[in-house]
Length: 185
Image (cartoon, rainbow, N blue to C red; front, side, top):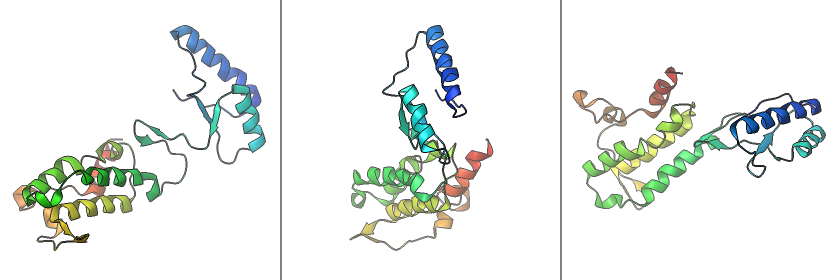
């Protein structure tokens, strides 16, 4: 549960009474060890420490992630979503790519690698750099690499992104796929 309030000392009693009413009604207890309080960056440090001590909660500068998606209140940079690249690279570590045929690599790339960022893309606008890096990792996996160097691409990536009816393999353009997901919002 996320509560928003004005960061004034007199609001502490309002928030506490709201939490008490909620807990009494639904039979819950506030877990002090799991509860965090976050202030905007332009709020005074002294006032934020005073309010934090009145609540007894941990003060944090960032709310972290919720269901795997970062809760953002700062500027979005490529490092914000670098965890997606790490997930994709980690998934590749377990595969012996050089033992797979090109058809096997294509199938794994479409079924697994392209699916990793989908959940985040449904609610967040990924930077173009991250989308490009994801496609780069997928391209290198599909075409294979020897001694850490990318192999020669047999067909342009734009052709690979075309539909099967048009002679491609229907790989998704990650940036456009992200935009399509956000159209519903």
